[in-house]
Amino acid sequence: MNTDLLTLFDGDEAAIRSVLNETLGRADDGELFIEHIQSESLSFDNGRLKGGSFNTDQGFGLRAVAGEAVGYAHSGELSLAALRRAGDAVGAVSRGYEGTYSAAPHGTNRKLYGDENPIGAPSFEEKAALLTEIDAYLRRDPAVRQVSASIAASWQVVDILRADGHRMHDIRPMTRLNISVVVGDGDRQETGSFGTGGRRGFGDFITRESWQKSADEALRQAHVNLTAIDAPAGTMDVVLSSGWPGVMLHEAVGHGLEGDFNRKKTSAFAGLLGQQVAAKGVTVVDDGTIDARRGSLTIDDEGTPSAYNVLIEDGKLVGYMQDRQNARLMGMTATGNGRRQGYAHTPMPRMTNTYMLSGDKTPEEIISSVKKGLYAVSFGGGQVDITSGKFVFGCTEAYLIEDGKIGAPVKGAMLIGNGPDAMQRVSMIGNDSKLDTGIGNCGKAGQWVPVGVGQPHLRMDQITVGGTRA
Image 1 (spheres, rainbow, N blue to C red):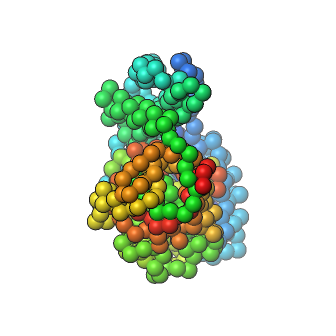
Image 2: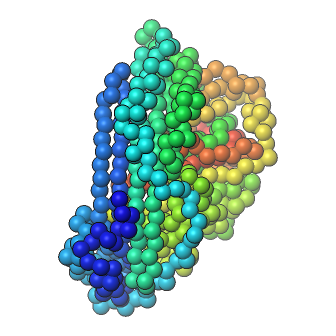
Image 3: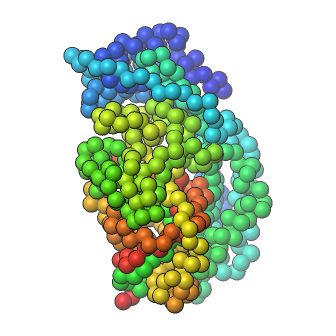
């Protein structure tokens, strides 16, 4: 398709800009966000192709910002008439207001991902055959009772126009493969899962070698859980593995460092800029500039180039993640974290790829330092309260640590704590920081966006563990 989205309107660019200038003339900020998105998904369950979908959507969102107030209107109709109606509604927020329209951010020539549309290749039939092959591969194990696999792709084109004449364009591919397997022994059944993806075509990770590794990992985790004993409850030292366990950092700390929560003083980190909020050695960054990663963006959804943003440095809070509105109101600089789910949504401060940097300990050193504790390798769901910082996370793979050695696998372990307090309890930081395999989604205020998480191995002292035995 033609990726110049302005040509989909029934008027020329000059007419579109005229509406935009009239709407935003007295506002502090705002933009016209135009989107075209295609998405496809296939799911395979219980030996058959269970579902398949293909969707195409397009539309625009028009925003005006006046102080703390926001006017927003959107439409799935790309026409000058619809744009003028949106302008009449949005412009009300700045009537009688005399703002100074913010200068546009500098553009970027760096592309973090290609323009390839992953939906067309491989074909729908080839993707269905791949899922069938994954199912057959896993069912060679007689303990396997159920296999679920899914493959999904999207291709998003965005154009962002500002009243100062600045125009930005981005094409964003996304792919993902997920595998879940249930194994059983008698009346007992346990699950293992694994997924991978990123802003790239399918070619990299649906080769036989790649998908078999994913399937083997899901099966390994399921068999580990099949032999797991009930997790103990109590306060103990906890070692977190590298990679995906960074989801706890994302939830318990990352959300609390988003600009809107701090401007409104509803974050546990509000007012603590420049203060020690984590143990020495803890450095946390949000980095939207990593090639082809799930959370990466060449530009955010306001047109600001994404950046490498240090949030916590050596335990000290040094920055927040900002969109343009909250940055302006706080006297700070936009950090490329203004994100939205789609054209029907307003942007807000959101994470991209949030992770902790490496320290100087090997994973073996960290584990061997624990007399009695828990080794958390993977997490499932979790909850966090932004204001208090309290969190609860369930482990999907965990082990006892006894006398510095990894012991029996356990099931039902829950990590319970407070984000800022937990960061003070980090006593050892591994030298193996890495990102997750490309499966993260983040929800906030009803909007979902893709993200990356990561960390090295960590030792956290005296964490509350919820379990099923004393």
